[in-house]
Amino acid sequence: MVVLLACSPYRAIRQIGFPKPIIRRWHRDSSRIAGVTPTVHGTPVTDRPILFVSNHVSYLDISILGSLLDACFVAKQEVNGWPIFGYLARLQRTVFVERKAVRAADQREVLRERLVQGDSLILFPEGTSSDGNRALRFKSALFDAANIELGHGHVEVQPISIAYTRFDGMPMGRMLRPFYAWYGDMELAPHLWRALGMGTIGVDVIFHEPVRLEEFGSRKALAQHCEKVVSDGLSSALSGRLDRTTRAGRLRYDGFDLPIHSETA
Image 1 (spheres, rainbow, N blue to C red):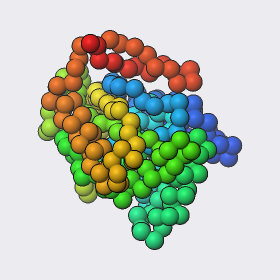
Image 2: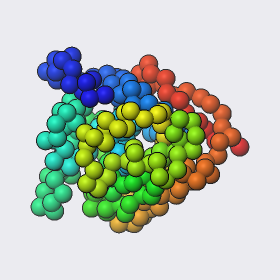
Image 3: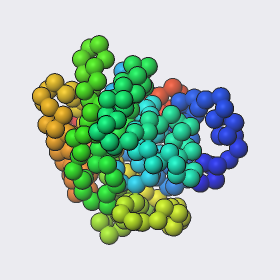
Image 4: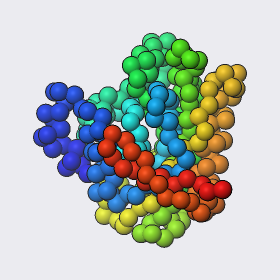
């Protein structure tokens, strides 16, 4: 995975731009190398710009969501300076933001411009990563982008739950999850090396119904709604309560086939 990040073809691509299909292919291949197999529940919005909001467990979330969505990430400014990962983030046109009130208006305008240009955005509103066993409190300040209007009203927000649920095909207990969840003061390199040396990982990705700010009246109420929806989805996946009576299907993104499961009646 790390070798792929640093190899010379991607340095060349940096000079000419990084086409979105290549970004998704890179993330898909990185996930496979890491032994990650996502199972998709629900349907992601793909026909219009949208703001995706998700719980955040690990650096693996980036490749998982990046392989499924034609979207750019919103990340804190310090990620721009990270070795390797900052480089990759710049290649895929990540929007770097500073969490300072004085910059809020400027940063909202940057996000608005990206949405107007047709980009969908992925945001982790917890502001940090968790141990994967629960969702943390969503910071309402990070929902400022939901106040952006796109001509047909405020930008839609689609909540996503990411749950690390299986290890080598068996249920993954809460004791195993920290081997893949990256949080607290864990060092990146040793954690990544250990994760890559373990078995295969099954991850449930749940796309919930999209909503708009005007449905809730305030940014805080919207954040609370998304937090509850994401948390409930995470709990259902971790406890095995997701409906496994599904019909298998495929979603197609510019030539890529992606697995998706839809609940049956």
